[in-house]
Image 1 (cartoon, rainbow, N blue to C red):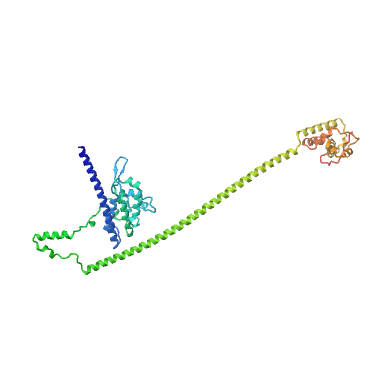
Image 2 (tube, rainbow, N blue to C red):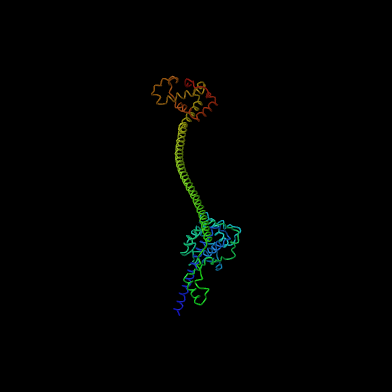
Amino acid sequence: MASLSLGLSLSRKKNISRNAAVERKNLITVCRFSVKTLIDRSCFETIDDSAPEFVNFASILEQILSHRLKGQITWFGYESPRSFWDYIRVACSKVPHSCICSIENMENVSSSRAKGRAWIRVALMEKRLSEYVTAALRDFKTTRRFYDDGAIVLGEEANMLAGMLLGLNAIDFSFCLKGEGLDGSFPAVIDYTPYLKFTQSISSDEEELRTLGSSGSESSTPENIGPPFIMDENSWYNKCKRVEQKYRLALEQKGYLEELVRLREAQLSDSVSQNKLLLQRIERTELNHKLEKEQLEYIIVELQDQLTVLKNNDLRSRQELTTHLTNQWPSPGALDVNAVALETLLYQKHNERWDEKSFHSLGQLSADASLSQISFDPGQSQDGNGKHEGSHLTRGKEDTPSLLGLCGSLTSVASYKSLTSLKSSEYLASPTTEMTSPGLTPS
């Protein structure tokens, strides 16, 4: 029983594989015949939707692209039927300047099957059907996702299909995308009768005639049957005219194709020249950008250097200003000496040891103070200025320590305030008076 079931399964697999191979072979052969009939028909008239050869070709191509197409699995686990347009829309999305988007946005075409049929017509009018099919077959991953094993597009017949469709680029098609052929409510049916041809050999005819003659029928003897292939002059003349017309049409198509090739070559040369110009412009822009970047970097470095120099100059200016202000104002020790001198002067005034007439002005007081400072300066005593000091001192009296303090009090703010207080007490002269007093005159 096991061997019997195994044999049945093997025979079943063989039958399935044979049926699939025969189906693929039939479709490819019929497609070749339909392409040939389309080319022959295009020599006499323009192909449109009403041509039976085109209707048959569209049905065959639709059957080939729908061969063993997988269904779409829904959320509930059911498999819904799918049209070949779903595969073409995904596989040909990367084709440059494709008509996929325009067909997807057509208003009068709603079903997926109708969009697929519209795509066939548009691709034929664009003379790019072979290009679309080749691009779709190259995307093997997408093709495996949409088709089961044994499909035509997954076998060796796919390459033959792309080669056959290449011959349709020489035909000028004219279709109406609003006709009845785009109705997706009915399936495509192939008409095999134009491609069926029965050839009967002469030997079989003679055998049949002998059989009939042996039966005693005189009317069916071979002597009464003439040669069936004799044709008159008119038929030969018509045939030659038909061939001549076909030859002229072929010449016209050849001229059209040559002109189209020249146009494409001119467009290609223009595109190449524009591409070169764009590349040169890009290189020029990159060079300018690089130069501007280097200039900006140089400017940034120069500005940083200038900022560093300005910071150093500012720090140096601050230090010089601090040193100048420190040297201009007297030290705290000098201020203390001036305060002691002022107190001594006030004490002498209180004891009436100085004559009030010797302080006629603030200038006399400043002059006496300067002389007292010179007399107590050891550097000044070595320069031989003793005569000058003696001229300003009276009675050869030695200088008191109070004169040294009085000399230093004239250069400080505190001493000036003290002199102001003395002026208010009417013991010192006005500070605006010139310093012309000859010297100190003690009482």
